[in-house]
Amino acid sequence: MRHTARHSALLMAFAIASGAALAGAQAGSDAASGTAAASTGASTTNTRLNTRDKNNTADTPQAQSNSKADRDLLAAVRRTVVKDKSLSTLAHNVKIMVANGAVTLRGPVHDDAEKSKIETLAKQVNGVASVENDLDIKTN
Image 1 (cartoon, rainbow, N blue to C red):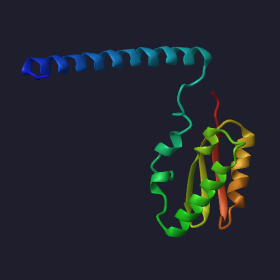
Image 2: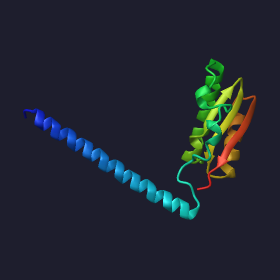
Image 3: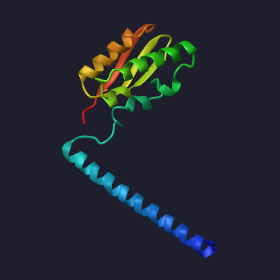
Image 4: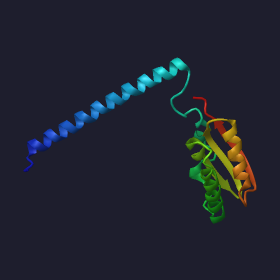
């Protein structure tokens, strides 16, 4: 099929219109879920739980030490957490940071049991000097 300038212009207009329609539908969906969340008092995101990571003084995974020992220890802790199938997907995806053998845990988990279990698992990994458990209980 031979594409003409008019054909290309029509395709571009269709793509733009489709994108705008999808964006509008998404905004409507977001507004509806926000209204539902507001009426129940629950948040639809973890923004509040991750507020401390926006603070310039807080360590984040992006500032993770690049030393081989810390990277290896981080991988060992992550493997140990993910290997435990009794933990939720949320718990498997917590932020883990390591600096000179000190492990910091951050992010949301479902309950106190998961929070404690992840800390215990991290402490059992050979080479971990200490664990700072900054995990949050997800409230929604």
